[in-house]
Image (cartoon, rainbow, N blue to C red):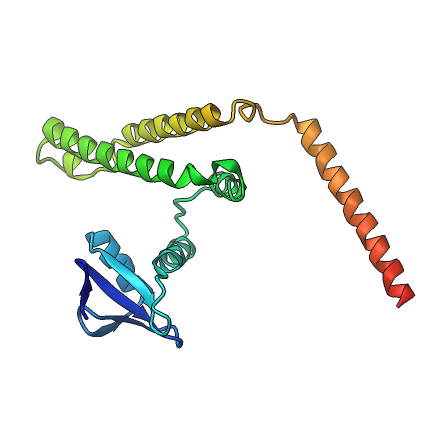
Length: 192
């Protein structure tokens, strides 16, 4: 079966090889990254169980892209915020919000390209989209503000970051608890 509801099926085998059932060829994570960039829709299934493992494979592609190029799309502060939402009440809202934000960013990117082409036409400046970085930075700033405002709506008390002294005190408390745990473990080891 080459396609599943219009999607290409990639099978991942125990030896970590990926097989594209649409082209009947083995592929790499780089090949899948190219497929994503081309807009090709695919799912990745565990060859043995048939489980959908698309999410973990796409996450692996992001990890490899981040480590290969050195040009990270995901700043550390964003990763920390994202991790903090796991197990939080906001966990259910974040995926939907991120999906909508990325779609809005994509739409704005298309609009920016159209505007640049209208303004500069077929000139080198119009072809080089790195020149109007101020437009991109403004879009990122607006999207970040929208995200922060949305998070404040769901958690009105979370908008104020704890003071630096509070964070230091919390870190000190954690260190003290770790030391107490070590002392207890030592006592337990001595009893045994």
